[in-house]
Amino acid sequence: MASIHDIAVLLCNVMIGLLSGVYFIFSNTVMTSLAKANNGAAIMGAINEDILNPIFKLMFIISAVLSAYFAVFAPSIELNERVAYAVFFIGTFVVTLVKNIPDNNRLKAQLKSPQELSQVWQDYLKHWVFWNHIRSFSAICSLVLLNM
Image 1 (cartoon, rainbow, N blue to C red):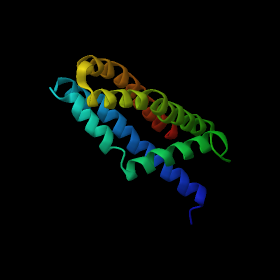
Image 2: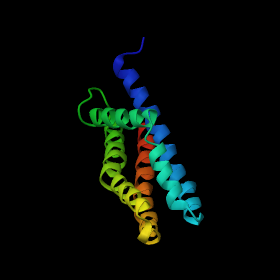
Image 3: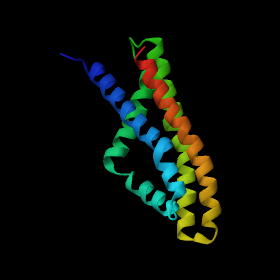
Image 4: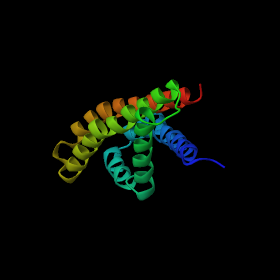
């Protein structure tokens, strides 16, 4: 029978995999398509609202809490796993809070008052996408480290 620790590790690792896919698809495809669309900023605004659903929020928060716990406190975690969880926590959760969410909030505010939307959207595409690449890379690196 699996222990609570083993179940928590499995749950966290599955969520890391799922979130890796989310970040990667935005970096690889979604943002490129939105940059070409006439109404890309509005579509991204809608995506930002829709992604904040209970399932995503729960997965985002639980993966952050578990990865922080495993990185710092969990007993019997190998060094590569500790590093993987730390990279995931810092490279996805912290980056999201410090970089991507503020960008999303600026875009949302500009969508309500679209005088300078074109410039805000161009800045958003550069800045938000860069930090999303960091999230993608961090999450994928975490998966690699977890599988070493």
